[in-house]
Image (cartoon, rainbow, N blue to C red; front, side, top):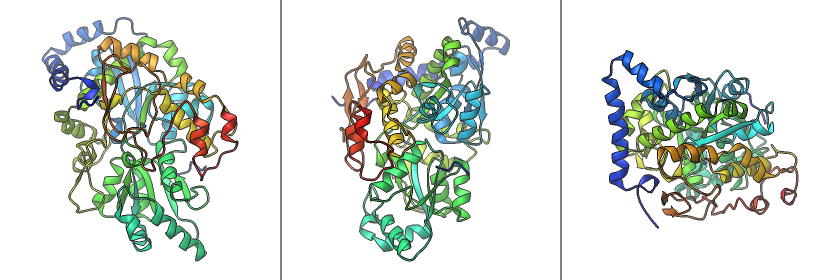
Length: 470
């Protein structure tokens, strides 16, 4: 593939509403009090928090997307400093930059696509470099947007399919078939990186309607901030990207969002914080301090009263560099699929802490591995469970969460597609309220049987039979 251009309670983490708000208020109050301490004394106070850290000055990379927020908020609200870390946030131009700079040590760690540590560790599309994650940055956050012209063609081809929600790719299949019959070249769509959630999501959505994304369309890579300009220039007819770049196209009136990735897979994993394995082994206390700061930042961010402050911070030029009124849409729980419509409620579009969102589930890693197998990126059979266990590190997360006193899962894996509504995870230090995990095509995923899961897909590009995984 060309690289050119994831008992009912209602409170985060299973905590009571009063306890959860009190915990958030304590964090805010602590940060506010520190602002009153003279800078010289403050430096000494922070130094006390750096005891045992092998490295106190770190540079962490981000891509300008709303889900870079845990790193940015940990920096801006003092959570990194609380744990003795002096962190510089480096805005990078592309996911390839992130991958390469972490690989060579130019970045200590970074905002990564959930599949990137896996690909780096296995050498999929890159020089092999063992990379791990002990922190999941968020759930959901992406969408599939198309040009107004293509949207109109899809409405004409199958108005019934386009009237449903979630919108299927059935109408797109009819447009593609019509173009083939007329001898036209395949249409060009974009996603952000070959091993991105976006790549697997747009493929999953297309393939569910019988579209072969490797042959029926042209699927290219474009960095997230460049998506809107390429849609406006008609270089592409659609894309899958994270926010705010779907709402930006909608706000400008140049495109319509068809479906969000929450609708494709409820509460799917999206980004992680990734570091080289050797870095984690050389600086274990620094790594754990970073995870603690990120957990606290995510918990603070998921309090509704704090979301607008998060929006204002990440909208800055030094971070996402997008208008506040665009960034706030998804981040405050609303979404507009078309310009001028009344924003629709989507309270779980961006989840940072609720539903055990920060936990690095090994079953999520295994799901990404199945998609790499499905689309031929992994060409030889491998032990999926073993690979997932090396790369996703809940053991490190549990140590950090335990020291914070926050609830965490006591299991490493879970099934997906088996809950259509809220449920409670009891395999945890305290019961954790969880959200739906349904796939839009009603498939279910059991990480204990990846071969059976892969056999359920009619459209694929597998290089070996799923049975070989067993």
